[in-house]
Image (cartoon, rainbow, N blue to C red; front, side, top):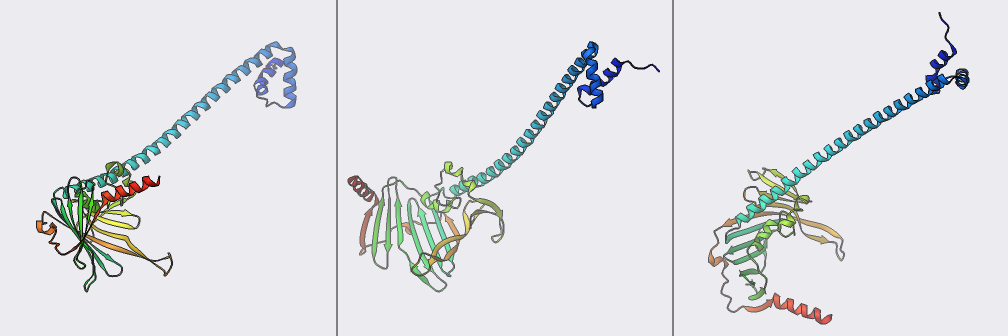
Length: 323
């Protein structure tokens, strides 16, 4: 077998030399040879160039794989975000759609000029608070009283009202004391003042403007049920308060958990007990008669008049005088 020359031996070692993996003796042999051999120097230079190209290729491949991995991560993230957004949009559209449907149905119910509303509220002291409203062609009557199982405990003033384009006049009549207090409000009003009491189930104390309604789905939990009354209804939950709403008409049916008042320990502001309520709603349409909303004969009653418009002017004048 032909014996290898020194150049052949060194060239076999050049790749490992360039990788710096030779032992000391072999490394020394190669370096001593390279001092005198230009051919092996050129070969080493070629090997280093090839290794540099390979490293660049490897780096390019690694960078490409990193980009692919980053794109995949970004796609996964955007996919998850899209799913979350789709779920949120679906939830919001459902909530808003229910609120819109219920409100529109409620408005249709009160589109006429003749309706009766009654609310019956029971509290934890076995009392019942009854509110009755008759409305017909801009005139109305409101009665309110408290009773228990035995008798009526307290009767509040009966209110008769008249709504026109420019003002609202109300007559608070106390038959026991034979007194009448007339109040005038120079602000345009309409029958929806009474409907507002019913539509407030969507979000308490928020005016029923559609721009405000955009935020309502975030404050209410909506579900459906069919217990107790034999047909499906919406259940609106606001914290501890729950209201049932007829799906077809938009009319409230029952409400639970509203705090009527709070009792306190003697001579303190420390709450002792919250008195919550259960309220049932009743309605009649196109049944109110003229005589039910007409102001009765008040001859012999003691009259008192109060004009809210004049009162506001007086308060504004006092404020300007103080300034």
